[in-house]
Image (cartoon, rainbow, N blue to C red):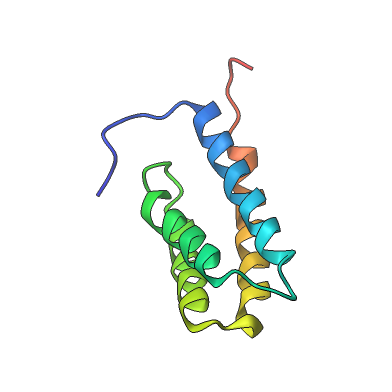
Length: 99
């Protein structure tokens, strides 16, 4: 379902920044992973990526949420890396001719 609201570029930039910061937090949890937090972050991205016009994040967000639910540490690092790379690739598109 497409969002009828057109979000400002700044809101999209902040969204990606927050999600990237959460992924860094997850990567730092190597010894004591907070699986509830992993599930929460995956669920948040899955639920609102389309609203922020980043539908390409949804499949990896689903994988992140599933890794959290299954406590799958072996998949977690790879999923976080893929999400960060994808978010990094999306950032250049968030420029405005008014900047």
